[in-house]
Image (cartoon, rainbow, N blue to C red; front, side, top):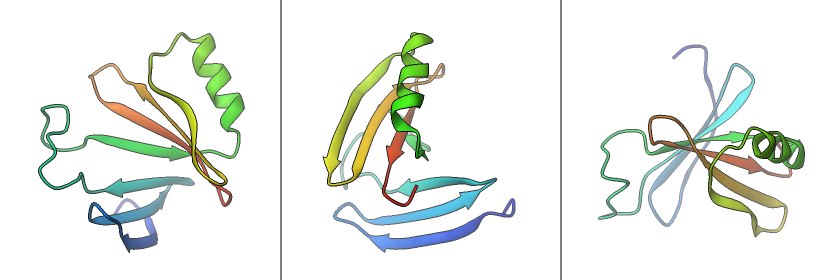
Length: 100
């Protein structure tokens, strides 16, 4: 849909993860852990944007005084993440991966 291309579909500890490429961006779609209430919302909990310029993006967001819900951190070798809040109370995850 919308000319998106499936890049990956895999099972995780929480359930299915699907990665699509849309308009040149990688979008990660993943199930919430079973039984977890996700911010009291039904529907999209967050989406992730992959970047190879992680430090630069983080610096730009800090200059704009964006609220970080999860400060930048390394979650495994070669993978860093951060979560920021968006105006409707949702979250956007920034991801740096070796292939991003």
